[in-house]
Amino acid sequence: MDGRAAPHAGGALRLRGPRRDTPVDAHRLDRARALSTIVEPADTPSEGRPIRWGILGTAGIARAAVAPAIHASRHGTLLAVASRSAQSSERFAADLGIERTYGSYDALLTDPDVEAVYIPLPNALHAPWTIRAAEAGKHVLCEKPLALSAAECRVMQSAAELHGVRLVEAFMYRYHPRTVRAIEHVRSGSLGPLRTIRSTFSFVVRRADDIRLDAALGGGALMDVGCYCVNVTLAMAGRSPRTVQAVSIRHPGGVDRSLAATLAFDDDLVAQFTCSLDAARTESFEVIGRDGRLEASQAFLPGAATTRALWTAGDGTTTPFEFAGVDQYALMIDHVADVVRRGEAPRTGAEDAARTLQVIEALHASARDGGRPVTLQRARVTSGSVGSATIHEGGA
Image 1: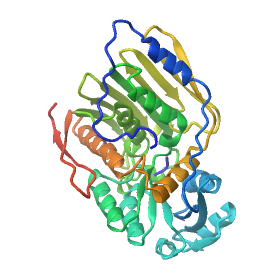
Image 2: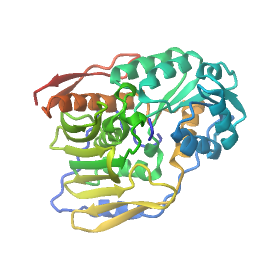
Image 3: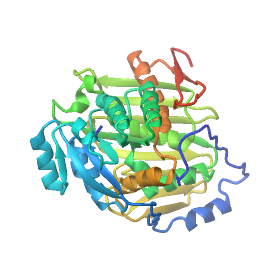
Image 4: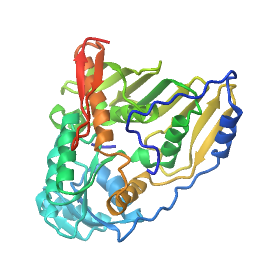
């Protein structure tokens, strides 16, 4: 709800940098300098014709970002939009140059020419409409967080597999070249063994009727912006935490207005993040290892300007990684085309979403219990599922 080619954030990859007697390794420094020039996104054309898209809903994120991105993408074409109101869909289509309009979501799903749908509906509606889209034979790009729980993720993925369609979570920041390179750099061991990951995402919600403040619709700071912090933490760490703790400030509507969290991993890694719907706009991440630090501001919504990430070696030498401005939403749309046409694994698929939601559920449990530690135990992943976790409250 809004807001691989590269190394995938999934699995139980555990990174341990080679042991060194000096604070910075010359090979790592040379590698960082070689990567520090402005990077353009690679053109990896998808096979076959462009994906024909429909949009379920006329949400602000669809109007401002995703519909224009489909138009701008190399391998997508925007064919149809649906709304509960025919007038709303017609206005949206007129403003954004869309050929077909529908006065209901079900009507769009019956259009045989639509191959994939983008779902920007409130969080509580992600699972039911993803399942209905899958049943209609449509591939799905669904807004983050993909579901309300890891269990819902499993049902959604099972529906996609049953009907032979692909399911991707719309974590658009994961498609920006800076994010891809940052994850690659951290996982290469260039920072040495990881010790700290810090992130934050906040902005002010001013409308009292904003759906982000509606508990029944799956709102709250953790679900809306904290999910980015959880996701980037897991992507950088390459694994899930052992225990989590959280404290929150509640909104009268029953959701968390602000939340602060600590995630403890094996191997001496601790991550911390803050998220808020009632604080000035801030978005950043920082990854600190024994041998260096990587940091980025405007971490999740960098816009179209040239962006950078800063790598600081153990000896204090700072090297910028610079990236040309791109439309990360358009890159996401083209990735979906690769998933559908070429059979690539989704960079942000249901398994990745389930890991993020397992942590979110545990953080909610901790916050409800006054910040007591919650331990996550990964369960065996069975065929047709995306993993699960058992949550134990009150123990480390």
